[in-house]
Each structure stands twice: as C-alpha cells, then as structure tokens.
Length: 80
Ligand SMILES: [Zn+2]
Image (tube, rainbow, N blue to C red; front, side):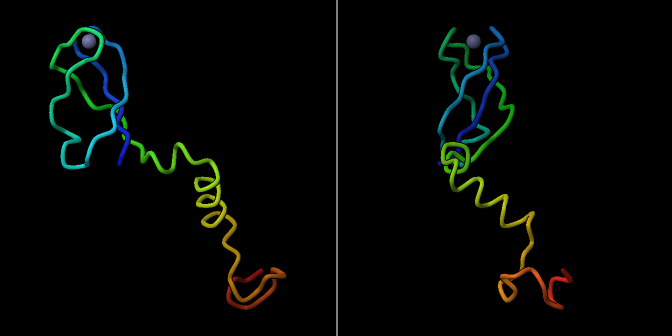
C-alpha cells in the first residue's frame, strides 16, 4: 500500500498515512489537532522506501545500464 505524506493546514504538522491509492486525495484527519483539512505533500511507495535492498537494486538496474548479454561490459548492444 502506498505511503502518503500529509501536511495539516491547521497546525502545519506533517504526518504519514498508509492508504489505498483510491483514497490518496480524500480528506484525512490530522492526528495532532483532528482538523479534517490536510494536504498531501508527497507520496512514496512503502515497498520502495522501507525496503533498502529493493530500492537500491531498482536504481542500480536503471543507471548502470549493463546489458544482459555482456557481463564483461563489452558488446555492440550496449556500446561499452
Ligand atoms: Zn493539525
């Protein structure tokens, strides 16, 4: 389930909530002052932010760009 960060319009404190995507933009009650007026600031997927291994593997796979057919880093496909 995605983790969303909200900021309370009333007391300006931040808090995080795990909610279904379908409720991401619905009004949430502030846990500090109980005001119903809060604003979503950022959203993170809990699976990525809480799991360091999965997150770093995702980054390495996209930035290193090594192709699967050249473990040695040398082929015409990837240009290395
Ligand atoms: Zn508040």
